[in-house]
Amino acid sequence: MRTVEWVDGRVRIIDQRALPWELVLVEYDDYLDVARAITDMVVRGAPAIGAAAAFGMALAARQFDANNRQELLRYLQEAQALLVKARPTAVNLKWAVNKVMKAGSSEALFRVEDIRNEMLRAAKRIANQDVKANRRMGVYGAALIKDGDTVLHHCNTGALATVDWGTALGVIRTAHQQGKRFHVLLDETRPRLQGARLSGWELTEAGIPFEIIADSAAGHFMRTGKVDLVLVGSDRTAANGDVANKIGTYSLAVLAKENGIPFYAVVPTSTIDMSLPSGEQIPIEERTPDEVRSPYGMALVPDEYPVRNPAFDVTPHRYVTGIVTENGIAYPPYEVNLPRAVEGSLAQELEEEDLPYTHEQLSLFDDLDA
Ligand code: MRU
Image 1 (spheres, rainbow, N blue to C red):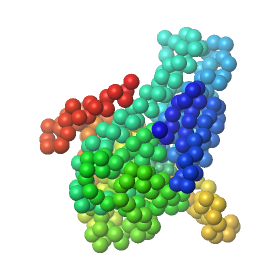
Image 2: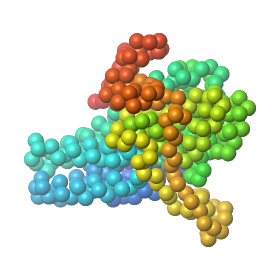
Image 3: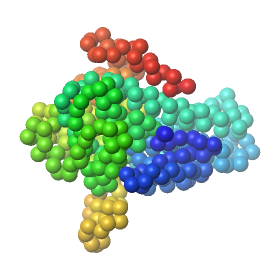
Image 4: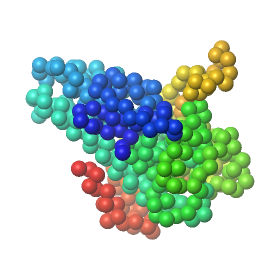
């Protein structure tokens, strides 16, 4: 089952707020409800919210009873503006919504019905390509994990954060599928605990051994030689390789460098924002203080205690050992190698060196484009 899917004219989403206790599915036929679901984190994770918003656009195209092309496109521009604002940091949201809007705005489409069909096709393509990108990143990234390793992971970057399979957790899944034996330390990821609740659930389902640690324990495990590799995802990566990701990622990266541990971000090219020269320009979402004061309704401190709650931070590229994309692993200098990853010219070069996979193995995932 996919995290986000189009089923019988509706968008079906796994409600991530209910996990790990219950697997609840919600269905929407109004794009405004999809926007709310993104803001309220019914669905979260950069690629998952991109796909949800793409289907939201497809819904918007259907729910408005337009008389002609102009009328429909005007309505869709409002939907586009609203969906893009649902969460500010993950660039996949803007990327996906704009892609679907562009598909529907083609001059070649005159009839309202043709615009609707084209937008739905574009949304489905985004969802399928996300799965394919994750499977490819899994193959590239799994080469970084050795038998006996302990991998430290932050937040949830798995099937739930994407359409299926996952980014950093997708690498972990692939390595497990390849028969490698290794251990995972999951940062619990305060304040919303995506690491403990969602990554814990996914690794349990997949039979991958793990232990949850308090975020503040990560440094202890790194300094005492218990961590061989740090893997994280990203919500937006700038052209220079600065990585915005779940709050706490920056501290992990600095600790990893101090302790000589490789730190990799696993980032589909849909998450790379080549329009931003550095991470300084990435908008950082600040969420409600209630998430810190009373996570999931459990009051930890009085309501009047002041709180700051940035949801993301930026890790400067000097702390990032490499960036795993669906087109190969980019290493510094990122100004040179990220554009090659985005264009797709990186993989061939890397494959000519000694990476343990071939074009043929990667083409196994081509059918997902259909
Ligand atoms: O606030 P969230 O849960 O949406 O944040 C998610 C993350 O930070 C993930 O690491 C990121 O989306 C990349 S994983 C696909």
